[in-house]
Length: 261
Ligand SMILES: C[S@@+](CC[C@H](N)C(=O)[O-])C[C@H]1O[C@@H](n2cnc3c(N)ncnc32)[C@H](O)[C@@H]1O
Image (cartoon, rainbow, N blue to C red; front, side, top):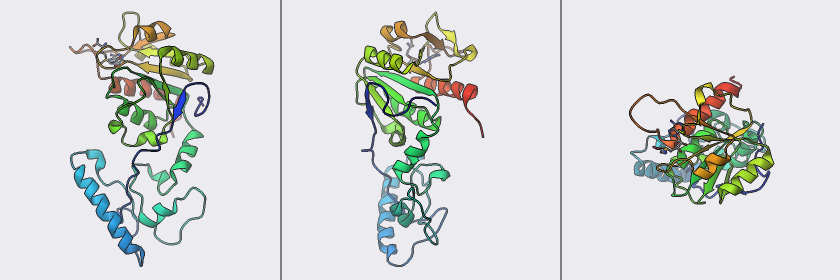
């Protein structure tokens, strides 16, 4: 398991200010509404429909949830009474349906993987949301943003609420943090000295760093990295998108280390 939240330097940011998806009374997998709950459910259902209509072009805004819980409510601290009552429209796997947000994060924290990912953010890179979402899917220990603190959350699709995101103002700060944690810094970029990712044995615990569109990985990060890794390309373009590169690298770690059920 990699070092998760709270350890080391740098400021840990939990993005709890992200909008919470509205519960919808329209059941898709379970139950209908009943009794006095019906009016409130209709209201929240209408709000959710309006939100979906506003996002009609966004394939991820499609309805993915479940309606109100049917039958006697289950017992346990992790259940969210509001979600049990109104339904759960969040983009979470079935295992976490109707769970409280904090309970989901706590459960994820018990089984996070050993890899971290970092991305340089000197000019508000638009790929960060994608990186955060993929890091959530592959259960990265943490995501690190180096440079500007602000980043465009749209591509994250609220997945940042379940992911530990740590900010480092400078490359020095980030490298000092990695050293303190005993994590090798692996730069991912197409440099002449880069080793092919396809043949590289990724350490179980490491931090993979990505550059941003345009400049790519900074010279400072290149110099600080224990190794730099490249993803083989075969076409005419000089590079692939940073979010795509991050997805490929994370999946390489998964192929090498993750326990597949
Ligand atoms: C679009 S690239 C930057 C532009 C690039 N420096 C160039 O000369 O065209 C942005 C980031 O994506 C990642 N990246 C893109 N293609 C890559 C590849 N083939 N191998 C490794 N990393 C890559 C790197 O992290 C890079 O810093």
